[in-house]
View 1: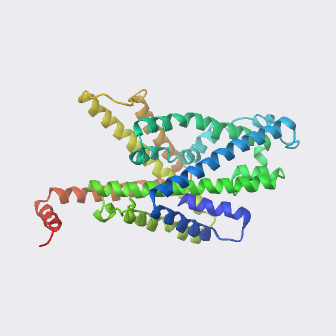
View 2: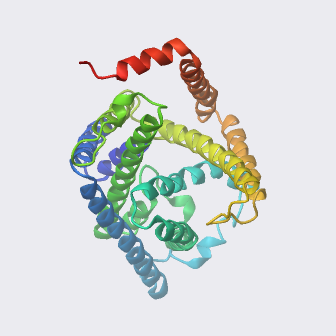
Length: 361
């Protein structure tokens, strides 16, 4: 939902008269149609969207470096922008600490590589390779690109309300470059929504196959698409359109905070699960194919860090609602888990379920 809201902001660069909820609805329909056709079509689309954004960032870095080296970016473009204008930590270290919430949002979804492994050829080779490449991609696509854009334009004069890449080149008078970059960031938002939509439906499918979700979600059509799971995911995502209609100015920030809260839950559960998994593997004296570095220290470090993110969010009025939603959501899950276990342990309910599954004569 957050990515659909971001799409509306990028569309505003060209057509500010179009409401964000209209853009969100249009791309919502488009992506769900793609996901209902064939998983191969989804994979092809993700491949080309990834190629576009990777090439665009490399070209942007190269073009920005050219502007800095030749002085074509104007008098305001200089590497000195990195340490002048107040230098690092102008408002103290707390500025960086408070920004951690936004940083966590940017790093969200890297855990989805574990879900993609189930439908990947040779995951023993491709999954570790993808995970290890995260370090290099962060250095290239985050650090280097930030160095370029912060050098091209003073940070205290940057406009708000869209992609900083687009706004900076627009401020420099390079409308053509800004238009191209706006198209690129639009494809990035579409790509993220496309991938999360895929992963959500596969999560529902996996839960249904495990008996942790309604059985109708486990239905797979002849093309290999879990249609019901995709439709249920789409139904709840559709709330994004309503949120953008009711709160067009605050929709993205509100949904972004909810995403961060979900990311915190994800990584705390992942870290705790890994602790239990490793403990079991050690007890069984079973070899680990991909050992975790500095286990169990890194698990505890991740949990402490995520708790710190919650503390930061609780101190910020606009973010506090997302923190308050976490115990509510966990309570809902706990209640559902309680009734599920009760149903399994109750002999009469178990017998009724068994009788329902017997085909009629």
